[in-house]
Structure formats: structure tokens, C-alpha cells
Amino acid sequence: MSTPPANSLIHEEAEHFRQQGYLGPLQLCSESEMAAIRAHIDEHVLTSKEHPAPSRLHCRHLDDRVIYDLCAHPAILSRMANLIGPDLMIWSSNFWLKEAGGLEIPWHQDAGYWNLEPPLNLSAWIAIDEVTAENSCVQIIPGSHRTVAPSVPSHEGTSFAKKADPEFVDTSKAVKMELRPGEFFLFNERMLHYSSANHSNRRRLGVAPRITAPFVKVYNDRSPLFAGHSCIMVSGEDRFGLNRLSHPPPGASRSQENKTTS
Image (cartoon, rainbow, N blue to C red; front, top):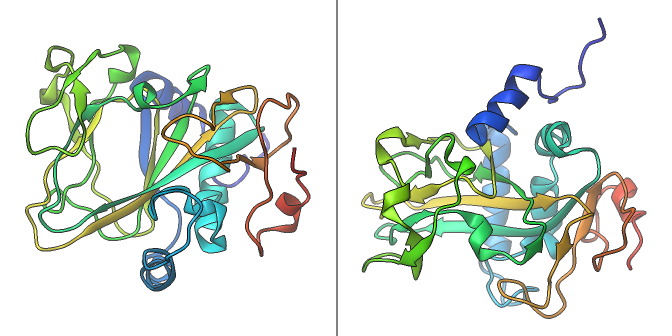
């Protein structure tokens, strides 16, 4: 029997993702490697006065090679390819920065916030800092991706205007995704997830690349995207021509720089 490629999923892992909607924690890089990336983020990314999106925390894979390489890391892409195939396209990324005292993010499903058709997405939540229950790690409800939870107005003290209807949220099943720097977990577009207010004296920083297949139409002229937005093929090829594509930022791997702009 042949040995599976590095970072590929065995059958049991892929089945766990399909049944539970998530997988992890998984290792992307060592803590020392992440320390160097963290220093770059603190010194060059979070302080940048120019960025492609209106927010400095959104889509920084478009203008910063270190962030692009982090979002398109083989440890992520090889596993995603086992789940939705080898043709993969990054359409968004978000830094999740929660300083000490940062607000709660209520229970929600990401699919309700995005303009994708069909609404297929895989996310990786990558820990830049140490992420614990004390400084507001993400919490998930395994298997919740099998039900679409209606949105209702959120309560005071949260950073989202809407939240999942509490009737559809069984918090007794919640799992706290505590991560060391350099670890990540995968989840899909309908996984119910949440993070509490940060009651510690430590910030919590992670980055979440959003990846889909090129047969999905990304409406880049609609919120939460922006004028000038584009997607980047990170694996395989685009056989559909539905989306505006761009090159990775300067210094990205030669194989990706060969992708053409549509």
C-alpha cells in the first residue's frame, strides 16, 4: 500500500470533518516559526497605513507575502484538497484581533454573511498568539453544520448585529478550540461558532483564510468584499472563469505566480 502524501487526511479524519464539521487542532508550524511571523505581523501588517481592503485586518494575503504564504500553507491546502478537490481558490482572509476587554462574538454561522454561490467554503483558524479559554478562544458545536440556524438581532455587548437563534444553539455540546501558536483547525461555512469577551490581560490574535473551489461565484462587488477585490488560485487550476483572479503578492512561489489574471 502506498504512503499518503504529507498532511493528507486519512479516511477517518475526512469522515470526522463531514460528520462533525471541523477538524483539529492541527500543526502548521513550530512556535518559534510562528514567533517570527508574529513579529512581522506586529511590525509591518497591523501597523500598515495602506492595505487593499477598507480594514487593515481584512484580505492582507493580497498585499503581504508572509500572510499569503501563511494562508496558502501546504498543511492547510493538502487537507482541504482531500475534502473538496485539488482546485482551490482563496477569496478572503480575516485577522481576528481581540485585545484585552474585547467584545463577545455571538454564536453564528459564516454562510449567512457571505455572497458566494453556491455557499461552499472551508476556513482555517490559525493561532498567531497562544489561544486559550481565558483570552477568548473560538468555541464550536460539533455537528451544528447540519442545520441552518436563523439569524435574530444580537444582544448588547457583542460585536455582531445578528446572532444565531438561541433555539438552534445547544451550548452543552460546545468545544473550546484552545491552540498553541502555529496550530490551526478547519471548519466549514455552517459550523456554529462563538467567542466570549476577552476577560484576560492578553490579546488574542489569529488569522482565518477562506478557501473555496473555482466553480463557486464570488460576488466581489458586494459586502463584505470591496472594489478592486480579486481571488487567487492557490492549488490546481480554474476551469470555469467565473471570478476575477490576480497574482499572489511579490515573492510568492513560482508555481502560483504562473497563474494568469482574468
